[in-house]
Image 1: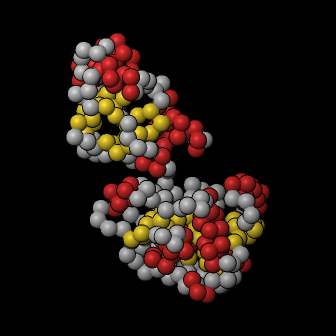
Image 2 (image 1 turned 90 degrees about the vertical axis):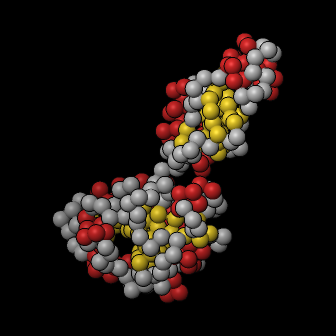
Image 3 (image 1 turned 135 degrees about the vertical axis):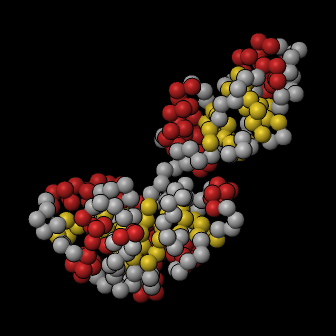
Length: 300
């Protein structure tokens, strides 16, 4: 997990304290949650519950957490979509609290330990430096006894695994935790707004020749009063020469939504064969530009 993690938090018991551990400059959410998330390019939300209507960034939910009593932090994983986030979060919390971090995979009494070992090995490769192990258990209480009553537990959001069934009941309600509480996490993909940079665009009233000399390549955004109204290619501008305006050469706009997943946006860029695309909100206001170079730097 990056050292420059940007965390936001909403009102709820323990949310502010947990957020401050993850990011000393964590911000409290104000106004619309999605707009606030994009504005601050937040990486993580600490909230009192998981919301079915918000999955823009990963969410962390504390349950009766007593941070002052924590002696260790343990990520309880099962190899599902939230396991790596749980492991990374446990590591970060442990570093902030100056306590050991653990990674544990539980399997049933009649289960195969090989599967649990494979899960642990995959995660250790992704989150190095964390003590890891497996535990055979038939209930949440046995898992807690193994990890220790003063160990803060970090679990993936409710799902169908054996481990999650021991800790969560109906309605995603946590039914088991250590004496000092637990933290549940839900993963979300990296979004376009995380990777975009300053917007690149031309005015529809600019001369085509001037625009071609300023921005000779690729697919350019055409913007009026902050709103994306079309796009134009460098080739079209060059062929038009100095007489026409950009508006005379533009075509229907091609853009990315601010909330698009980065992996999907990368595929769009590659399929269109363009070096960059404008990023817009739901009202087609131009927010930024996503380029192939920024994705390559991230390894997408």
